[in-house]
Length: 94
Image (cartoon, rainbow, N blue to C red; front, side):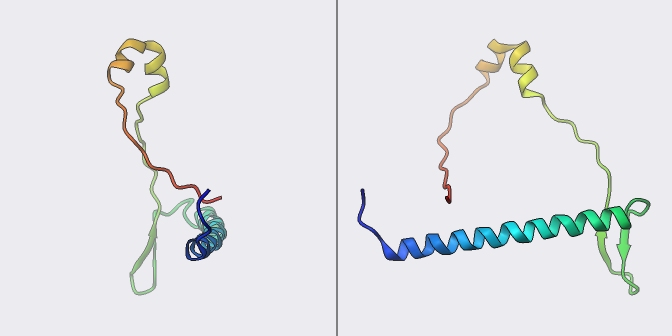
């Protein structure tokens, strides 16, 4: 095990605190967004101030996604032929 590094430990503690704040802020953001959508955007596509400044828009978009799971099940050999490997770094704050 490596020697304790106070500077790094302090930064990690600060990161944990910031992560908690971000989580709380994200929850508040999502709640407010849901309320605005429910209360205003059910029959409107944009919100403008009295001066005509657009503060928000709300649109419905249809997106197409490639279903990897079905492709892998239906064409396992072809799926394997197109797989590639790459190194990925992961930082997990506990």
